[in-house]
Image 1 (cartoon, rainbow, N blue to C red):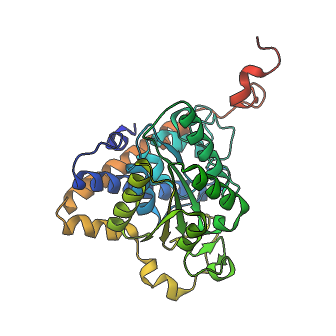
Image 2: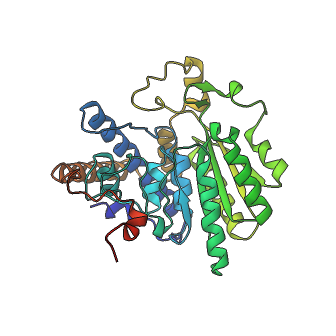
Image 3: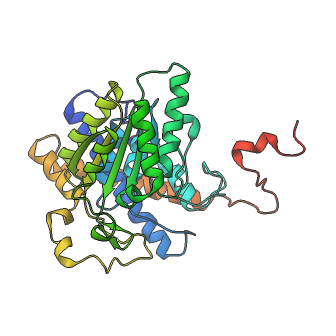
Length: 342
């Protein structure tokens, strides 16, 4: 059902620059429309738990996903729908998780943002800020010990996570061991409602890389072309053996922290600043200016995305939720260790 979009990502081997940009844009478009559908379902009482939209962050997220190979490791966060799709997540998996289907990757047994497939290098998110970096480090260590080369591990986080001990410990570990880690910070100016000037004192989060001997890259997170260039360069540097890469992307979350939050703390002048420009519009303008595509083709992609998403939601609404009396609630990873099994 989601193959129309996911097949655009050919394991990091997309040919021309225009093909890569078009693939990334399609993931952005699918992610934006999927998020809008989740918001509608949330307001209709069809989703239990929170809904956290990636509106304004799609360019950065898609740029990560399209530059990773299927053999790489990816640890996305709650606003990384575009990156998840680019890394190969089917739309049906996202819908099943949000709507609690027993047929979903988490079997309807976990929070709706904690989905993943570790065996495929797609790591379910840990909510504690910064915690996923050390998990990615661990996977990279394991693959190194197995003699697997040429891989990259990407971990996403917000600017608030850079204030945690988990961030500093894991970044130091990755630097000392020269792990092929790409750490992408989406600096959306507010850690929930806490502004940056109450979160850190440094002038630029990229400066935090210097103390650990890590290369840093800064980018305007709503500039589609710039995200594709900078993230692509960081991934290439890590893959070539240059150690961890820190990417800091300045952008503005174009919505609340979640659908329960009206974001009234974001001042109007910030919304009207360059940070507040919508990455979707900027990406479309870039593609049209470069003549990579035209408005008619974009309209077709939009229609295809809407149809796929509506079909997925209709299918999932017919699927069962977990039966609390019949379900085996043993953790999936330790299922074979439970009592009564041989």
